[in-house]
Amino acid sequence: MTATILIIEDETEIRRFLRATLNANGFTPLEAETAHEGLQKLIAQRPDVIILDLGLPDQDGQDFIRDVREWSQVPIIVVSAREQEADKVLALENGADDYLTKPFAAGELLARIKVALRHAQRVGNSVGHTYDYDGLSIDLSARRVTLDGEEVRLTPIEYRLLGVLAKNAGKVLTHAYLLKEVWGRHSTEQNHYLRIHTQHLREKLNDDPLSPRFIITEPGIGYRLKI
Image (cartoon, rainbow, N blue to C red; front, top):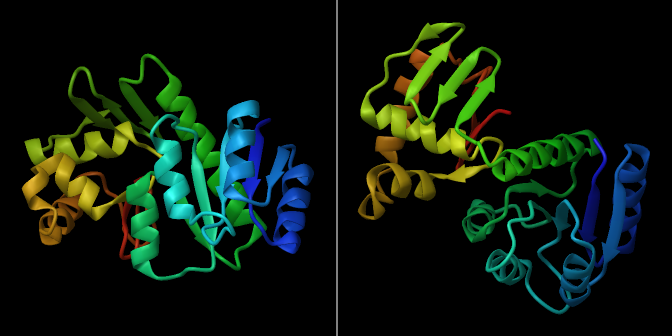
């Protein structure tokens, strides 16, 4: 999987580690030490994925994400020492695709990059009406869901929830985002709605939350549909 990855990170040792990891796995790294330099390279070289530190010397990474999302949907993976759930949720609500807490393993980062690239490919696909993964097929235009060739009967709420996850497959979706998209903007505090219907949906998909086949729980943050 060949892709250009822009690293926006002010710590030299971390940039060196990321550069070596990306080079060893067939990616082309670009580097920036500040948000301003990162923005210039984003505009000039159009990378496929951004790896972003939040603690930049000239601009907070949260503000950088908001600024970029006004004009670009390039996948953004945050790598930060900030480990509070509030920071993770805010980054995702601002438009980040994923969040890794430092320190992290190289293998985990590479896996997240590949997921982000697959998600971007799906978003860029002009058809984009189907989801197929490990026997689960979701035809959004026909409103039909099958599992291992058998039709799955879903309630309207379950279908809307699965549909939102499928449209954003691979991307972490926060509780607040899912509640707003499925139940409306006045339901963003009703997390129990989401928990109950996700449980019902998993039961119908034979999806064990302890060893998920399709729906991954991001503890305290939200859910992600595998791709």
